[in-house]
Amino acid sequence: MRAQFVLSEIGVGLRRNLTMTFAVIISVALSLALFGGALLMREQVSVMKDFWYDKVNVSIFLCNKGDAETTDKCEKGPVTADQRKTIETDLKKMEIVDEVYHESADEAYKHYREQYGDTPIAGMITPDQMQESFRVKLEDPEKYKVVATAFEGRDGVQSVADQRNILENLFNLMQGMNVAALGVMALMLVIALMLIVNTVRVSAFSRRRETGIMRLVGASSFYIQMPFIMEAAFAGLIGGVVACVLLLAGRYFLIDGGIALEDKMQLVNFIGWDAVLAVLPLVLVIGLLMPAVAASVALRKYLKV
Amino acid sequence: MIRFDNVSKTYPKQNRPALRDVSLDIEKGEFVFLVGSSGSGKSTFLRLVLREERASHGMVHVLGKDLARLSNWKVPSMRRQLGTVFQDFRLLPNKTVAQNVAFAQEVIGKSRGETRKSVPQVLDLVGLGGKEDRMPGELSGGEQQRVAIARAFVNRPMLLIADEPTGNLDPQTSVGIMKLLDRINRTGTTVVMATHDQNIVDQMRKRVIELEKGRLVRDQARGVYGYQH
Image (tube, rainbow over all chains, first blue to last red; front, side, top):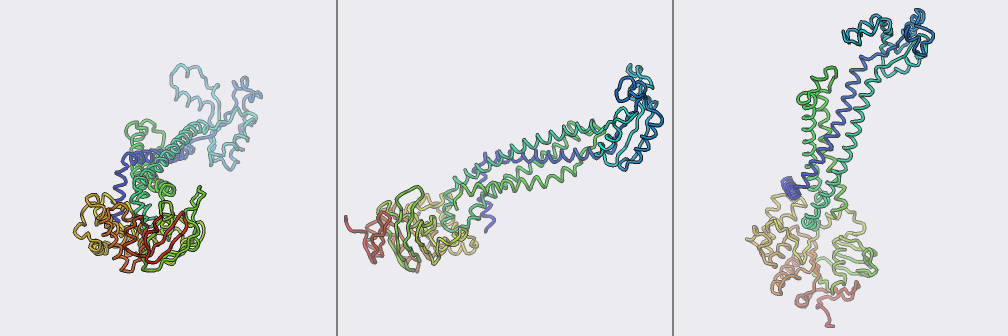
């Protein structure tokens, strides 16, 4: 088979269907960009989880004098030294617990003052209103439930709080966005596939004379179909390249320049360029293969060989 | 070359079969006219030989192969041993004469050197030497049909199928085409030609096979077009 002959056939075919080719390129590019974006978003969530879960604690708040009057769980009065002691030893006995740190009411008050300074709210709080607490660091932050069930409802414990909950909301939001992106991607993918099928149908029809003659002189079905498949694959590859550019530009715009999240949210760890680069080959391969497969399926229907 | 054993063909959604119980044998090197009015089954006969269609009943052998047993992917290699010529020429309008002929070699993967050698040769044979770079639109009907014959013959097929090759041509041009087909037949290629052209059949005095409403009604060596009804 002669490469030059095949290439010139592909060029002719693509030019003949220029508008369709553009439509295929754009829809493939958008669906792949969304697909890549969803992958990167997942990566971002896991980077953030790694980063934050290291720093998050489970806090066991102990009853103080004020709680004894207002909270049901503390009706037996503020925490006693004995209770505090057993909680601490029980915590340290648990295998999943990494570190335990006791924060006294005075320390809590001090942190509080540091945060709010001399604002009017700060003046309304006194040290005995602050709760003392155990800050517990877990080996595996996912095992929060174990600690919660062990200490929730014990005498002297007001509540067990997992700081993960706050983050979880954020992660859920991000994952929700992810699902939405994948949904839009699926829709774009369907559009891209239908466009490809239609393009193949049109170009099979406009070239029925050539393909009919090819058939008569005994060209193999592979030989007859290949220009169509290569056309679709070529358009898809260009779409894939455009998607890659969109992903790179998107990361730059969101994180480095433009919106510049890296400067604004310094506490957050963002995915690096390496993560973006790792996604690109997958995007390109899918951009190449998906239209080719769609075209060969469409050819079965629209091109008699 | 071609053998039909009790072949019938009924197209889907049609009651009347296009071919009914046709049996015949065409030997290597024969020149055979296929005659009959429109709808008599000539085209169906040729489509079965080219395996564009499969027989509903009976067996079709072409070039020693049972076409019913020939798997789809082997059909192209069978067709490479056949040449086909049609009433409407079926040339590619955007390619030159030489490119049209070379197309038949390109699609089956012949090397460029081979094509460069065999294309001028076959164009000389059909009497189109010197017109290699013309476009089909610039040629007369007779010349276009010669290009089509050159394309059908360039791969030196064992069997040439011609479906009313003179149908669009005036009588004088038709004679030239027939002389060309006769010359190709003399090289040993079997020629099967469907036609309506009474003069040609009567002049050539070759074997005549007549179909009527799908039945084989006459198979005559050195025959004429038909009895005057």
